[in-house]
Length: 271
Image (cartoon, rainbow, N blue to C red; front, side):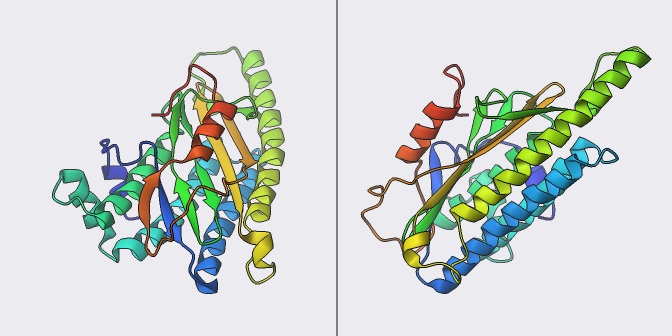
């Protein structure tokens, strides 16, 4: 994106307890969805490679993944609102429009703005949920208070250290941080495989194999400690009784509530 996600710095509540449902009417649409999810998996693998490199700062690894994610959001926004999607999102933000296209575009743009904050804002967890159904898929961009889940891997960032350490302790902390980043890189690389397994190539699998799939992720930080998690999710077979012909906002769904109970500590809330 060309900067809207950096300017979109106020809350519209368009994200809260809602998801975007997008139709998958044919093989071409399925291929586009698979391409999107492959890009997400590729971005995680690249972050893992950079985290494992001792010469690359942690923030660079996260920023590289963010830029690739921003590209997928941009393509989604263009499909929804056209080349002027940035103006559409800002018009919704200002209150100049309140239609389906405005709400959908603002959903993705505000979501991206909040995702970008996760490396600078402490105690903010990015908690996305993506689900595939026979005729559609949903994207739920969620954020929660706190910074971790019971399943998350933790790793340290020396660049976020604010206290002064003596040389000996600083060297030890740096070495421990590098070890934790290598361990996290192995985990994050494995989660990329989970994404590919949840959303397989439509040209290489039968419809029965691919018509249901899902993932839930979580990432945040507190001080020097960063966390990451991604698990498979089984979609609710009875969630949608109606067909969908165009992208639209829907309620978050039973899977959202289930994953909140399963992965968020009791004292954390969806923001």
